Amino acid sequence: MMINNTINNPMMPFETPTPGGFAPNSEVIIHGRSEKGKRGVFVVELGAGSDVALHLSFRYKDEHKVVMNTSVNGSWQKEERHANPVFQEHSFVLQIKCQPGEFVIWQKHHKLEFKHRMDPMLINSLRINGEVSVESIKFERFGQAAGSTPYANAYDPSAPSPNQYPLGSYGGDSSYQPNIGGGAHPTPHIGGGSYGGPPPNIGGGTNYGMPSYGAQQNPSGIGF
Image (cartoon, rainbow, N blue to C red; front, side, top):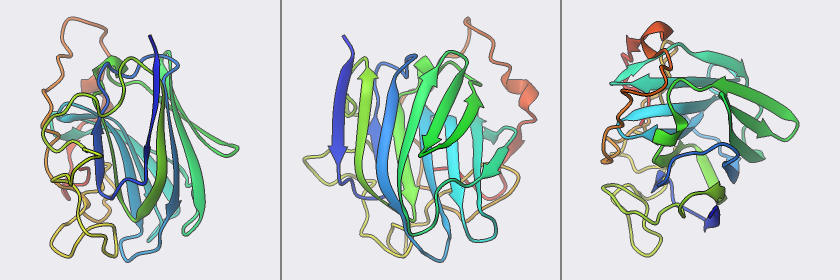
């Protein structure tokens, strides 16, 4: 049975488990607004244990780009860079849909595609951080309701989470440095630790070609 559910008005930085993987035709729809701040960036990530299956970094300070990437075993892979479809201090509706072979990301009439670099069924969390406010996050056609399986640092709508901080100029307090990531073109540090979920088992299945993506250690710790 496929499940739809919605999380409303989450605090930033935000994290929730998405148990059951990201199956074909599953979709996340984020209604939000890009806020202005000194760091000029916000991030949406789909995590797979300590890895990042899809990293979306919306950047404004030095460039108007969205950077897409994957991180495996602490190393960022090859970036894909496109014109940023989200304007600063504007509302957006970001749709991330899993299709066979790729993610398709829509913002209004702007379409982005990102080929799967690991099995999307390993995805077990969604995280949002940076200079952004979010009105709602809708999960459509998931195997289990998002947030239904707790683990360390997960979002709990009934109680403050360890990953919830008073909002500052970038969505966190002055002592918290959000970890914004993506690889070779560093952006401000927007991050805050590991998922706390179990590392994915990527052996014995489809070979997604991870070593061939030009893996490199991210010098600025960009990513969550």
